[in-house]
Length: 116
Image 1 (cartoon, rainbow, N blue to C red):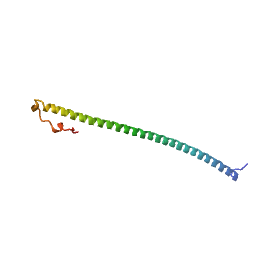
Image 2 (cartoon, one colour):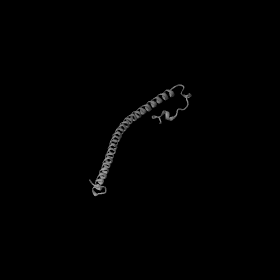
Image 3 (cartoon, one colour):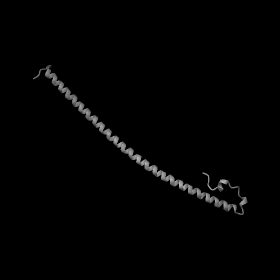
Image 4 (tube, rainbow, N blue to C red):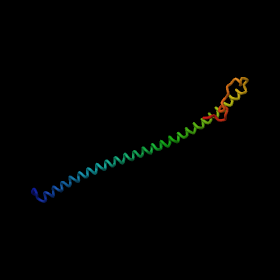
């Protein structure tokens, strides 16, 4: 049996210390690997969520463009209807026997296109 202070005892203690150190390193490496794996999974999840948001945004923009186009068409149609109604009203007022009693009608009211 090796005696205290002998070279073999010191070497045995050194080997034990190295093994303890290596076990600590292995545990630390395992923790780092777990953290890296969880971060990688979270990064992939965030990328997937961003892609979903991107496609939703593109779809919303497309739908918004369609609504805007329909509203513009409806606005033009209503402007034309207002202009037509204004002409009909003006013609009926001007050809009325009481036309001289009415105040002067603004020029924009008689115009083809209503300002706006």
